[in-house]
Image (cartoon, rainbow, N blue to C red; front, side, top):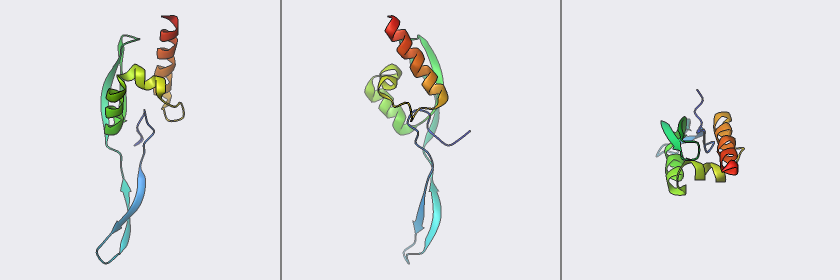
Amino acid sequence: MSRRCELTGKGVMTGNNVSHAKNRTRRVFRPNLIDVTMASDTLARSFKFRVSASALRTVDHRGGLDAFMAKAKDSELSVSALKVKKDIAKAQAEA
């Protein structure tokens, strides 16, 4: 399981710990990932994703999973999230 958000693509970054004496040692910045279950109103079912806390707030701000997927870039989504996006778009086109 990779340390990458399935909805935004946010992943591990690297940087330096800098002491008072300006000694630099390498460190990693890991995203705050959470396993969540999100419901789709269009498909009337739920999906499990591993997303960052900021992505969870963004989904809520945009009005749910369906609205988030409509605006999400395909390059940032994981394979499973991309499949959900296409299913939602297909269901909305039929309705």
